[in-house]
Length: 341
Ligand code: GLY
Ligand code: MN
Image (cartoon, rainbow, N blue to C red; front, side, top):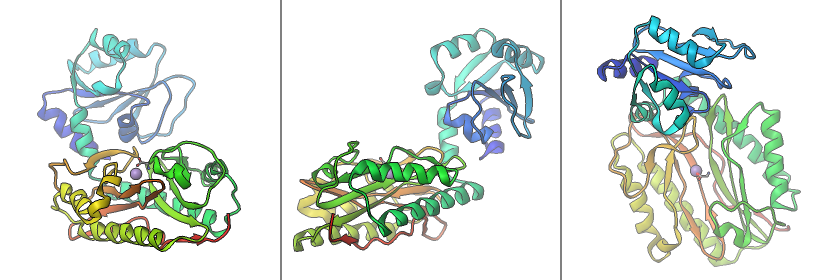
């Protein structure tokens, strides 16, 4: 969390502070916790203040104000601090919130600033993402080690129960897609597991930070050409990961995948990846249109896929370091074959 940096940006933008509302991921980013019905005020200098309802009791080093009427209390507080103009996250405030706030303070959108800060992670954030990845892989290992599931839903339910046991949330609804179902990258059905490739795309969220991993396994006896296509995709995925380092052109990552896939390029129907943090999809976008270069401290996913009458996707989470990269997901990628469904 980069509070000091944000405060510097507020000053640069002639803002006296910023107001963020609960449910906005940026609220979580700066408050480091989710508090229902609360409002966060980050002044451009000094400590933040959190306005909470009397129903909540939170542990925090921030100044706490238990409100009777949130907007009335906020108004009084901002007035006492001589706050005239605040940054808000336009895309996450409701029309009603903005209207009420605008009655007593001027506002300016600071979403771009916050998303820019969130793009590169602090050491503490990286540790949390690493932990999210290792816990996710622990669950994935359990699924594969003793695969007794008959339906896609059973696998998803298992992931959810294991996440609860590990005190984690889910980064997103898991995707478990077998046979031709896997030809839809975000398939959401619950059918009986079919023969062929099975895509498992899952992530646990640890202390608010997401993991996102995909592995594709095989049920039955793969044909030679199925092994070839899997291994081709795996080779490409590894090659692209090997390119990752600070300063590398992001668009070249996806372009490499598309070039290497040759005639199968048309079957790769989504972006190569995305940034990962408190949200499962955040900056930077990892696609062929990107104009950005990789920055140190960024965590991105690399997830090439092929979708035809079947689906294969292989996804890792990767930390960009000054000299190269570090894989945060370490689960084996060689095709795991389970002979019987
Ligand atoms: N893991 C789901 C996605 O990245 O879209
Ligand atoms: Mn992903």
